Image (cartoon, rainbow, N blue to C red; front, side, top):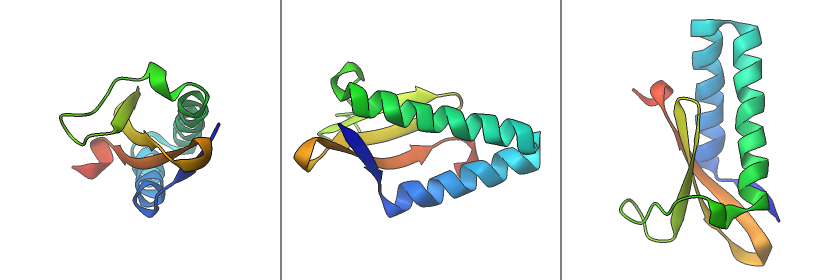
Length: 91
């Protein structure tokens, strides 16, 4: 199984990196960015291992990565769609 990012998730990633770079420096921003992509791989490998986000949206699941929460759903053709990545950069 693999994954794809929604346009909103792509925008969230940019915001996360900028927030991390401005607040913690390039090295920390790079390390955190790598951790997020490792989470995407874990999600794609076993999406059913993550809790349901049904109170937020039916059919969605979530994964916590550091200060952020990754919302996703299992899509067509065994592809997980990363919908949003919500965290400190959003406030």
